[in-house]
Image 1 (cartoon, rainbow, N blue to C red):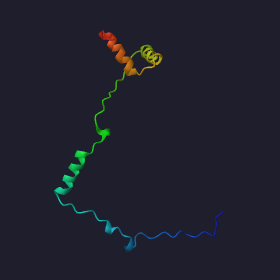
Image 2: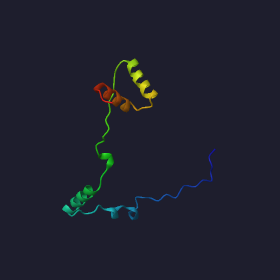
Image 3: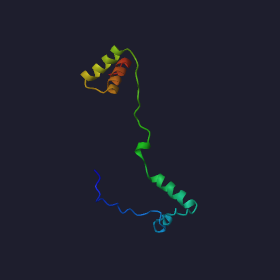
Image 4: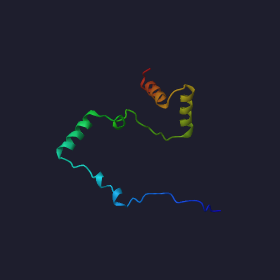
Length: 96
């Protein structure tokens, strides 16, 4: 059922000369000024997300029972995988 009492919305026509975007022209560059300012901003700003992360990643592929055993060891001792790996490596190398 169509409502006959509806009226159209009053939407302006954006193609009229009064509504142009001519007053939004790009700024004129004066040569080295913009480059110098950009370098100064880069020198004082630091973005932690762009710094090299101290963390790495290691993916292991091996027999499932061995990997499950390792995961069970970590869970039983409530340790992260990297922490348990360090303990095992220290033990292998004779350090404790």
